Length: 247
Length: 303
Image (cartoon, rainbow over all chains, first blue to last red; front, side, top):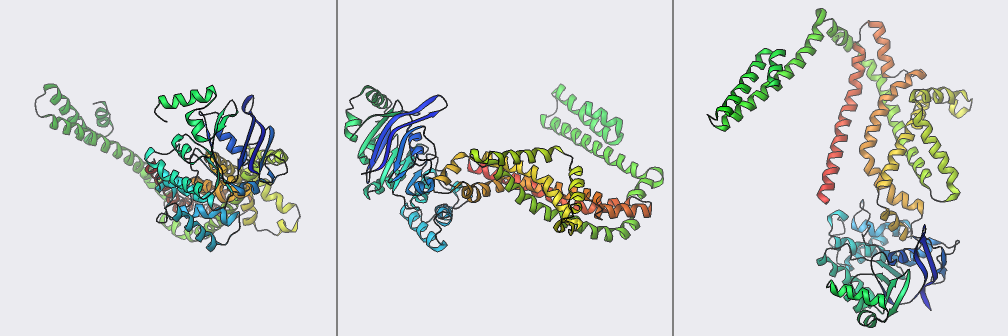
């Protein structure tokens, strides 16, 4: 039983087809990596899954909720799937712990003490127990992204959408963020991540999908897709990565 | 050289010093004779002398104007006795201005936030609401404030509705100011909201916030912070415009001063009420600048 299911999804911006007849299933406890050149639709796909973007054709399911249905309680969907963004998008007027608390208080209606305990536990888990009262601008990119992950986990999501979460980071800060994703994967969190970190994809992904032509162009086990793909566009993409020493 | 000549014409004593410095500098440079440091010093002194001459000229002209015609100007504006007798009463009436302006400012912030949220609710269903809000904002920004004040100030009590009819002039005046300034401040807020990165709304929505929840807890708090300097500036405008409420018959600071001017045949009460305004507005202007500089420094520190 798939937890996230995309069926014949089509999405257009004006006259541009971003997604075309796209099909994807993600089972519980799976870690699926989306790879592909910039602008191929990876981010759009993730944003459609939690309803930040609407689709023009097909249907998207999260568990038993149909995201693409006009009568869906979209906030229920969003409580079920958390999202972490490339540019962190922390709330700059709140401290780290307030960032992790605000949705617990205002969306889940938790009381302040419980929210604070939960936030502290999550921030400790991402290694930031000493920085809970810092504002985002006083944190490094890696630290900000770890707060963002804690903020998302505070809603107890059943799945995570990670949208190129290390792309805006200085190279030396990438590791600390990936370490947390690795732990989540080991704990069995269902994840769908768009990434350019091929070695990381090889390590954690149960499945790798190469996105091109507005759909899943080729998919399979990480080892297969990243070492010996069958189809020409995937091969060309990997060749370019090798040439630029990124694989 | 030319500034020094000008200085010599308008105020010979300092001008001549400036001229001497400038000439000395030129000669030194041309002959390459004494040290360059000396030439530079001569030039600096020439500049200082010019600045001093100009300041003296401006202050002197002002003093001359005040003392003109046997101190007539000075007496017309700064009659100490007239100031002393009129200021207590003016000050008391000016408290009314302060009261109205503070009530109005609170109302303006609340009302303009309502307007800006109404203007940006997404969805086709709310199109009429958006149009009404846009129409409101356009209308009241297009009308002279005084006209709106007359319309509201005389109109509300004339409706005969008990709630409005029972209101004091302070209250109807404050309502008029809220209606006018709400339109302006809503536009300020809209600018601030537009400047907030779209990722903020996306992040809030992805955490399960509804549109209004995201606005209230995430977007508006940031917008209000960003507009704080503008809000202070608008408060200064609101305070100044409370004097317009005199057209409704409100005996506020300026009206009181004018009455006393008639009694005393002397303009000093107007200076007195000016002082009342300045005591509040000048520090606020400085505060606004300080906040702007501080937030700019903060942003740079972040970059």
